[in-house]
Structures are given as structure tokens and as C-alpha cells.
Picture 1 (tube, rainbow, N blue to C red):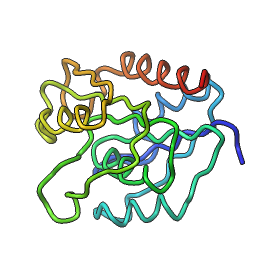
Picture 2 (picture 1 turned 90 degrees about the horizontal axis):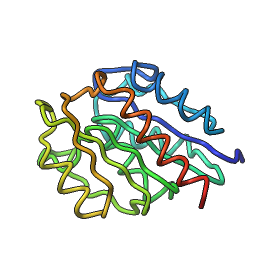
Picture 3 (picture 1 turned 180 degrees about the vertical axis):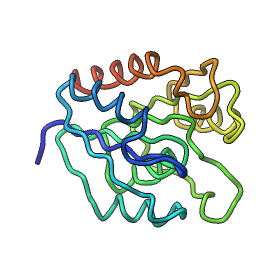
Picture 4 (picture 1 turned 45 degrees about the horizontal axis):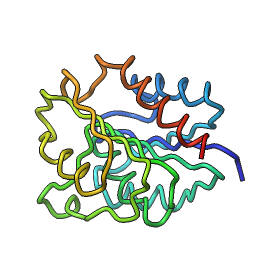
Length: 169
């Protein structure tokens, strides 16, 4: 079992090594974390992606799950089974009233950071606010849209702080 591991879950339309994940993986590696970013592009169904992550069954002394958009939903829904020490969500597609997207995440760790854009036209900000409120998560709202790609330095800082907190535990 590895000591420190972060597992990224990409969004519905992106891939495992898109702009955000590539940048944030460098931040994680600087903190001493191994990085996994599975390719979920074979399916547009959330449950298929959750099942893939659960089958991967990542284990570490310090496990962190991270996800963007649909990947945020996947990461959050996997928390009960994988029991990560922390969760980092970017514009998470949580609390949609659609079949397959309407699951209620359980087992959310105490260390949970949610980042969302004021101008997100895909996932309403209210959904991130609801999740953060229900799970006592830190919520950071940025002057950005859904991808948050224009705020990479801030995402780096927020992930770096979360990982530093995990390492101190």
C-alpha cells in the first residue's frame, strides 16, 4: 500500500489528463502524493464511472479523492466505500434531480473542499452550496465558469492546503 495517493476523476466531456488534472497532479506530487487519473471516457453514465473507481479500489495510508463536474459526483459517491481522508471537488455535479445523478453521497470526510465558479452555466452554484452546507465542507466561490481552468493558480493553492492538512493528520 502506498503512503499518500490522490485519485482524480475527470468530467463528462474531458479526459484523464486534461488541463486541470495535469496542473493539480504536479501540486500533489510536490506534496509527496502518488497520482492516479483513470480514463472514464468509455461511459457517460455516472454509475459506470463509480463502479470503475470502486473496482480500482485505490488504497493508501492517506487517500484523497478529487473530481471535477461529473468526476466530482463520482468521487463523492465513492467516499462511503473508499473512506478517503479528504475530498477535493471542483464544480461538482451533485444534487441533480435526474435518474443516475440523484444519489446522496455518504461518508464524506471531514476534510472536504468544494470550489465552484460564480458563472457556472452547467452546474448551478446552489447545488455546491447545498453540498457544502450539508457536509460542513469548505466552499470557495471563484470569479470563473464551469471549467475553472482560468483559475488554476487558486485551485493549486486550495489543493495544496488540503493536502498539507492531510499530511499533518
